[in-house]
Amino acid sequence: MLKSSRPFPLAAAAVCLAGLIFCLWVFFTGGRSLCLTDGCTLFQDFRLAGVSLWQAGSALFAVLLILALLRLSRAALLLAACALAADAVLLGIMLFTAPCVNCLIVASFIALTFMAFRAAVPSERKERSVLLILWSVLLVIDLGGVLRDLAEPWSPATDVSDASVQIYFSPSCPACRTLLARAGELEDTAWYPVAENERDILVIAAMTEQLEKGLSMAQAVEEADRSVPDDSGDEENAGVRPGLLRPDMLLLQVRLWRNHAHVLSAGSDRLPFLEFKGVPAFLAEPPASAAQEPAFDDAFPEPYRTDMPQIPGLGVAGFCDGTGEKPCEDVPQQNFSDGLIDTSGMIPQVP
Image (cartoon, rainbow, N blue to C red):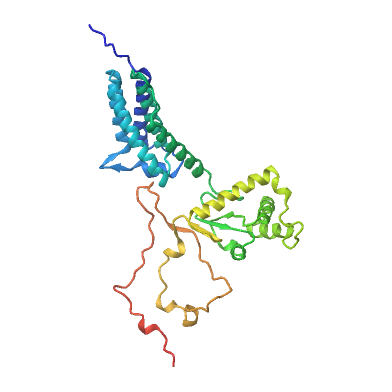
């Protein structure tokens, strides 16, 4: 029996087997234990021409494993190079969407397979692969996106992850202070501080200490604001705050930068900034009947009104997350009249 003179690529076969097992595991289980970012959810059910990415990955590693067992390293290297080029495109797509941890793990298996088959193919010169360098750059950038997504906004309060309303505020923002005064009426709300100046950092640090004493958010901000001197009018000491160089204060600044970056990434440059997880309850309420319609003066309030309007409950009345058997929670349906309403006669005539 003749023995093949071609060497057996043991390392490449081992990597192909590991990649095959991982793709099958993600395909059948969803891989949620490693799903650290929103990109995992985005790409988990993604299909191209009806074929799941995890099915394609399983088929790829299976074919590569067969080629390795047949000692066809050159053919396997060509297939691995094509897979690495396609994966580089996917990494580029994740730069503009969301990085997927499971996808990055598979990408690493593809790159390792490419390098293993490349080392197994006898060649006179082993030049650097431009494709591998490009893929490596995209991978590093996507890994940075994973770290950024893992850095969640920071709140000094506890148990804020399940809050349906998130409010970003600054202690020096008058509109934020007005909203804070109504904090008791805003149920299921999480508050995230943002520093607009250096004094805000000191106020937020003092506010955190007040919250640990059991004060409410509004009371903690008021007490912290009174405890931090305002030296904006002192030209000699203005801007000189050596206390901000303490390690705990530097950590607090990083957390506040994270909150500020979240507001900016959401497309807002103003505070307070509100985010809703789902449909707010007051938007799902059925319209008032004609007997309950407000009078003309109440329906058209004076402009530049200084008093803050009543804020209904901000609890979530419906949401979609794709995890339940039903795609969405039931939301009360509003019965609108058929056709458009002619509002031309509603405009008051000036005598």
